[in-house]
Image 1 (cartoon, rainbow, N blue to C red):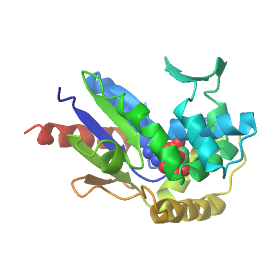
Image 2 (cartoon, rainbow, N blue to C red; image 1 turned 120 degrees about the vertical axis):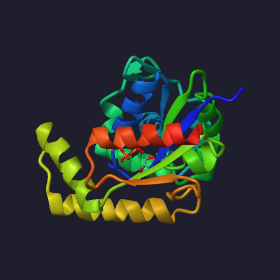
Image 3 (cartoon, rainbow, N blue to C red; image 1 turned 90 degrees about the horizontal axis):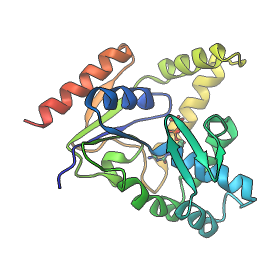
Amino acid sequence: MNIPIITIDGPSASGKGTIAEKVAARLGFHVLDSGALYRLTALHALRQGVDLSDEAALAALAAELPAEFRAGEVWLGGEQVTQAIRAEAVGEGASRVAALPAVREALLARQRAYAQAPGLVADGRDMGTVVFPAAQTKVFLTASPEARAARRHKQLIEKGNPANLADLVRDMRARDARDAQRAVAPLKPAPDALVLDSTAMNIDQVVEAVLEGHRASRG
Ligand code: CDP
């Protein structure tokens, strides 16, 4: 069976999650937030006292992750962790565990199982390059570090958190470099990806561009 898959990869704060949700809603497709699986693995390890450099133990945790996504909520072993996985420390842990090949391997089958009729929108770093290399439509969503930092700044301020724009731009550049330079599944566009720079685009314009790319790929 040929399930239509749209992959949306890109750097931190490029808007992948928002775009993936909206595109999926328009098409009635399922959604895979692959970053959440890395965040859940990190959170589970922190809770279980597993060292974030113990690759074998982390891979075992990832393979058996008692996680569930229900109606916009994320659950881990009977606990609602929707907010907890968004914490800065968990994001930092996620980027560390995501650099370990055995952890990525352990999460592969779970990610591929999301490819169900009528279709899937998958967001992450390596959806089009590693997890779904045969996806019908591949998008690489980017924006300047300044634009991404400004978006994150706005989100943080709205939630009442203190934030410094210059620090965010610096962190964004550092994280981009780490994601692009890691040995396993580095952040890079698939050769056949539609590259969208959303620096000067609003959300609706990006959604339309992805849907247009999907229509074009169906021929
Ligand atoms: O929201 P943000 O883009 O900062 O992070 P995320 O998409 O929730 O992903 C959390 C971490 O998991 C990132 O730092 C990535 O390095 C890693 N990740 C990955 O390696 N591969 C994926 N397919 C998705 C996320």
